[in-house]
Amino acid sequence: MYNRRTTFLALAAVLVTFGALWLTNRAVTPKEATWADVLAEARFGGYRIITSEELAKLYQKDAKNITLVDTRQEWEYRTGHIKGALNFPMEPTWWSRWRKAPALETFLGPDKDRLTAFY
Image (cartoon, rainbow, N blue to C red):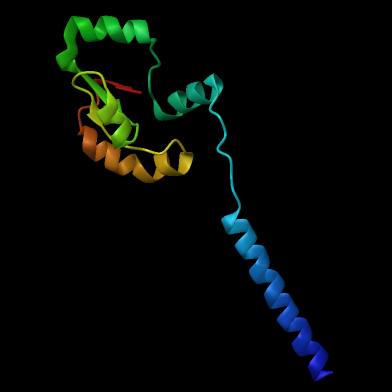
């Protein structure tokens, strides 16, 4: 009886360990963001969506009053960016955006009336 219970507990521990390792180490393909996802996130965050043509007009008209935040990785930013854009590297996952939200608020400062564009 004691031997069966010990064997069962050891087998259960091995299965739980194997399952935990499988779940934490499996490859997860990130979901491609759709336009509907972008619009939903903008509504949730209180952002206004503008086209690249509108941004170009605003930038040419008054570039000093626009804060452009480039959320690509630093090496991507170094390969080329819009003049005056600030780099704030962020992974394209909801977890990264949620985790870095307070740092982004600190990065941008308290001015909520300023037009900010992310790309």
